[in-house]
Image 1: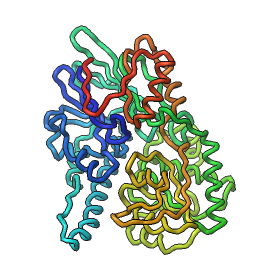
Image 2 (image 1 turned 30 degrees about the vertical axis):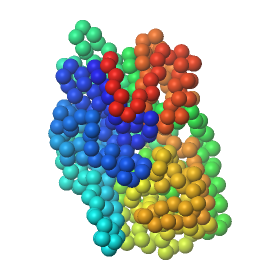
Image 3 (image 1 turned 135 degrees about the vertical axis):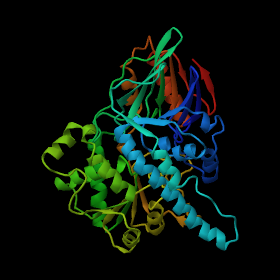
Image 4 (image 1 turned 180 degrees about the vertical axis):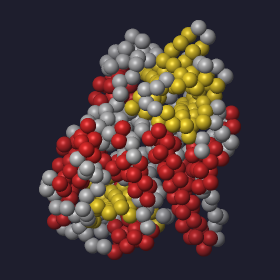
Length: 465
């Protein structure tokens, strides 16, 4: 078996791992690289290590754009095989890829108007809605905990990763000649006691593992602390009539925040200010959540049994219409606007930031991980001036960062999860989906905990197993 690490190698975006097994060629994940615009576009546009037409199939761990977002471009380049994923991932990916295509087309249209006036060459979107629709037709949904024979040599099973709705740990039983071995990819591993979702499944023992390492050297606070901090932010905004602008991933994070707000307001822990979820994708994704209660934990299931909506309350408004979105900028605080994307790289959040970032009374609430070179990371680092749509804006708004709301396991949670595996059997751990400094810290902890060999692959690096 040959593995080539292409995306999310010593970084956190663009997840893509290429395999050759007994004549079969396939990929696990095909995500968008996010970061420096020109560099990211070039990395996303071309598949330099393989020909898309040669891939037999793709296995998708979950629907987040950094794992699924470049699939339409893969299809555009000639891929025509099946895309295996869980049923909930299929439901989410269908709306997310269409949304991604629309955003790219609209953002390019917006930028091209300016470039045309300046006499500059015009840009083209990475892919279109038509490409996304062709991709959606290739999705093949599978249940959790079910062996599926993809080829006579490759058996696939999905285990719940507890990261977002439908997220999975990819478990492969591979036969090569007389040898049979177990191989797993953690996907993005969730945390115990996350709101809404069930905890990550324990998987059978493996011989080889690809493991995420986003927070390999960091530690989260508890969700109880996060709830109180969120309540404190609302109290602060209410006291000074501020707007809270929240860049948020449409799938997973937005629903978690709405769930927590519902809880805070129902317990009278903060004034019930107006909350707007301004993202057509978030609206559609929330409906997908409602349609997949099999993924919910006991607390959320109890909400549903009591005929309560965990994703709705009196002062919550879901915005889909563009004109309604624009009108939010003329409203006075206190209020909260939750909008995608989570790393503030595209979508309606850019307009809300442009309209509110220079007001020192306002609050920008960061609730998730932001990759290097993204606008979200620049806000986290509190750069005095940031660019939005090519124009410079002074960062005057107060910036509050909540890493504890992350749906990624932290260093201790990752270690505790892996400690369940048989160390004598596990021969190699490959670390992906993490900044290099986090991976080095996590690698050291793993070796100190008694794991045999830990490898941090570089982009394009190939390993024979």
